[in-house]
Amino acid sequence: MYNVMSPKAEEFISDEEIRECLDYAQKNKKNEALISQILEKAKKMKGISHKEAIVLLDCELEEKNQEIFQLAEQIKQEFYGNRIVMFAPLYLSNYCINGCEYCPYHAKNRHISRKKLTQEEVRREVIALQDMGHKRLALEAGEDPVNNPLEYILECIHTIYSIRHKNGAIRRVNVNIAATTVEDYRKLKEAGIGTYILFQETYDKKQYEKLHPTGPKSNYEYHTEAMDRAMDGGIDDVGLGVLFGLNNYRYDFTGIIMHAEHLEAFKGVGPHTISVPRVRRADDIDPDVFDNGISDETFQKIVACIRIAVPYTGMIVSTRESAKTREKVLHLGVSQISGGSRTSVGGYYEEEQEEDNSAQFDVSDRRTLEEVVHWLMDLGYVPSFCTACYREGRTGDRFMELLKNRQIVNCCHPNALMTLKEFLEDYASPQTKEIGEKLIAEELKKIPNEKVRLKAREYIDNIQNGGRDFRF
Ligand code: SF4
Ligand code: SF4
Image 1 (cartoon, protein in one colour):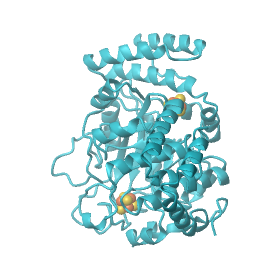
Image 2 (cartoon, rainbow, N blue to C red):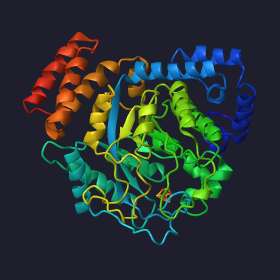
Image 3 (tube, rainbow, N blue to C red):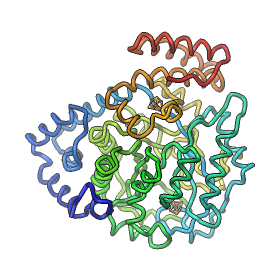
Image 4 (tube, rainbow, N blue to C red):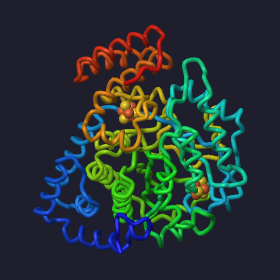
């Protein structure tokens, strides 16, 4: 029985409810009156339900689909403006005891080289990342209580935050590790993590169990209820994600919106981010396992409909996607992207070699961070290295309140411009710097609050003169 307030995975992600919604959406895919009614509600920019969202995703009326894309763009503009927050993944260890069928780190893969960074190697990776200009990381590690116990992850976080190199500093460490206990989540919180990220992979229990035949991750309930435990452990920024291509995308789309609804209803705070990765080619993975791959068009529609359903949740695309695809989804609602990513353990310090098979998946967008920054600016976006909310204690419901009141615009925009200025001063080539300086001068004028605008200008002058780390 579906119950958004239930602590049980099978009740807040009810299979019966999802299947009913999928049938309902199919029956109404050309129901103009219903689709118009949902769009009217969505235009209030307060979100729509999973049942309404899947109707929009399934909509087959060309004119209405154009309205859906336009509305997604408007919401993106209203809440996130033209800013795109930058981050990089950092792979700590690819030891893993799970049997995920779609991931080359699965325990039975004997021909992948297994690596785990020492603290000295963590230092080298972080310095390489700082030298690129990164301030925000997402830590990645397989699940292995012997090789990568929680203590190891905590030690790495401590090392990362302690490294100061030239003007570089990692100011926010997000963590993507296996589902764990409330006690462990409390330790991660105490270590100062930003967002706890855990991809559900698929919400369909049967398919989930088929794809995760062995290891602790095979427990669907424990995995699906992890975000509730993370919040019980004091982590109030959590990041959801499904791996599109593992299962019917309509099922997983509905599931992820239901998960967001559950967190908001049951814990009082919705997810901080939603990631939308698609399955990629990787070592020791049979491409025939996946017959659910989605087209670029469907991918764009998913991004637009997530933007409409949960306007307050940031959306992330990674370098799994090509530059072309990333360009297409940026304006539809994506607020964070990775840049200059390496998906192998130790890949930043030692440039990944062609024959290195320790990567988790193929990176499609292989440009450097500076190239990505340059490209974003050419497209009219402001690349942002901002980490201010987390460092000002604006997490969880405090962050959501600001966002819902649209007040974040007076914070995000100046913070984006100041952190971009730091990047230009410390890491950019003269050509990138020239474009960036012009962009900053133009964008400063757009800060609505005069006091904030003047202060931001003053801080930017200070950065020019060697000052760093100003924020609103
Ligand atoms: Fe391990 Fe994660 Fe890969 Fe599964 S997806 S095999 S848990 S690293
Ligand atoms: Fe993100 Fe807060 Fe910075 Fe805005 S001010 S970009 S919400 S960290």
